[in-house]
Image (cartoon, rainbow, N blue to C red; front, side, top):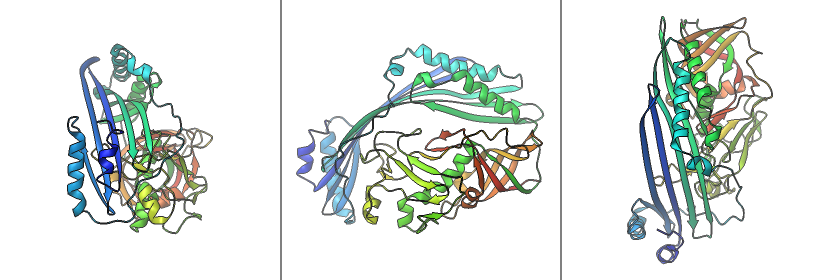
Amino acid sequence: MDITKAKDAIDSKFDSYELYYLKERIKKFESKEKEICGIEFKEEEGIALRAIKDSRMAFAYTYDREGALEALLKNTSALIPITEKDEQRSFPGPYSEYSSLSLYDEEGLAMNDANKTGLLIDMEKGIREYDKRIMTVRNCELQEIEFEAKIRNSNGLTAEGKKTLYVMSALCVAKDQDEVSWYDWSWANRFTELEGKQLGEKIAEKTISLLSSKQIGTGVYEGILKPQAACDMLGILSDSFLAESLFKNKTRLKAKEGTRCFSDVLSIIDSGKLGVDAFGFDGEGVPSRENLIVINGYFETFLYDSYYGRKFGVASTANSVRGGVKDLPKCGPRGLFVKQGERSLEGAFRNGVVIEELMGTHTANSVTGDFSLGALGYLCKNGQKTPFQGVIMSGNVFEVLKNVREVGNDLKFYGVFGSPSLFVANLKISGT
């Protein structure tokens, strides 16, 4: 369906509307025993309509190409009478300029599949050939994702863009006196930026380093949260930054703007231009921007989409997110990350714990910030590392981030969250 040509038919039925078009292609390569064992291809093309009449909003979507407009009009018209009135429902106006982001890899898409499968095999070889104690390698995958999005609304907003994303991942299992596993992944918007063999060797090295794990004693430690664990902390915290949480009184940061709430070495930014979900505009077509949420420990602003921006009388911060055609846009983080420091923390740290991974973050309380999570990592004594697992790290994410003493220079994104290593005091560990 041509969403531009559909304008007249929709205008006649509703007070205002928004059309969202998404086309997504995913090609997945899988390897096993250093051979390609599967190639899958999936393509979806759909369109969604949000329509408002008499302050009532309805939503419908379809993947059908034939009769798409008729189906959308029929379904939204049927839903509007049974939806609640909400005077704040509307759509953003037009924007004159969008940032030009280099997110689309035309050369990578055109590249022969042999180059891509070769990179995947190199990753698996990098794992399998690293150490004889490596027993199994699973989930060796390379995904090539291409998508195109367009948004039109009745206020004159027009936004469109394309993006590619390449994701490599694998799980390694090693066995000696005990058995351990490690899963990791990396991503890039351009195929040539992937490093298959290096990723494989990194996964293998981490797995081997965790063999012969020991229990550690219960206590309060200082230590380093590595990027993956720090991103987990940021994920627990993220809802507290959302205007929706503010409206529903589900954030401890209410009325705290301009107040020091975190460590003075900590700055937190949300950007629609960085990370896995980077794009030229948000889920409503608002141009992506950088939002300084925390500056040197001081909480500065909440994150708003258009709806909650209107409720609080402020402009959208371009924080409307959509999971796909089937999902309504909602207020959410786009690329939430801790600003990195100037040096590596590895050489500066000799005693304490290094937390590589946290498990069970879905059980944390995103309102209070309280958590009790499984932890995996190393105990360091005079620079010598001994691996541990099967311990519990507990506390409160607000307190953890108040106790950050230094921020490393190894920023890495895991999904929409990014962080460098964080040196933190007063980590509560329950072990033996």
